[in-house]
Image 1 (cartoon, rainbow, N blue to C red):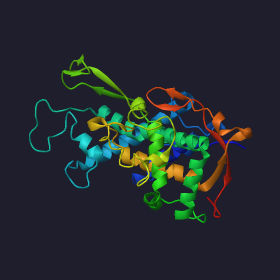
Image 2: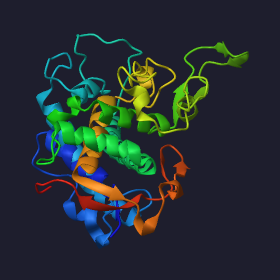
Image 3: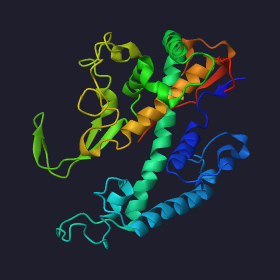
Image 4: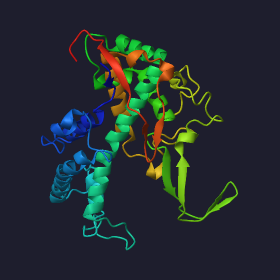
Length: 327
């Protein structure tokens, strides 16, 4: 039977984030993922699940903040983390250096909690969406899926599942993810603000103006990309593709899936790693075909344009086990 190719990966990543934080208590209960048998996760379009799920999340984040406040670690310490850095800017915090500028940034506890929540819950949606886009593009171009599966078979073998330590040995996998991020950036329009008065292309842009950067259009611009509307991962392949030297860090302005500068995505590395791992598991563990005799050219590739650009319809596909070992 056809199944959503990426049904609850966002929820899986939430558990992953929680477990990698070194905690044995979960802010996200497993039954929240499968309530009503939908396999969905709480979201703005599923408020009956979202509202009751929020309270455990708030308690979890309060616990994080309280623990960091009790230990009062200096943000300059080698083992300090991002939360320690944020707490140093609390309005009632003691300055680390013994003095503080009058115009220094001040944060409230709610500000800190909101930033932590953004990191924990903004990532799973975009990781799940990018994973789904990567699978959809490969199912629309079966030759790309076959090439990835062959790489996985050569490097990993068919007698075990992919492990995180395998990812750096899978260059075509990385190309697939980079190409999916190019064609379907997690945040299609980047929100910025002009730091000073300037003139761009003959237009005056006053300081404080809201500036919207269309990353979706930049990533497909015909002046920068050969066949920019075509899913072709090999363009990033070292020694093979014309875009092999482009990175994801925002220094190549024709390729901005995570933004650039101080407002670029702080979780770029984690997000890329999570998508690579998800795509590798799905492609390696199963063979996939479209349901009901659907042809690849008939696959709906429409998106919902907003703060994020997820697929307009879920990707349904028929999986068959590919490995000789249990998944």
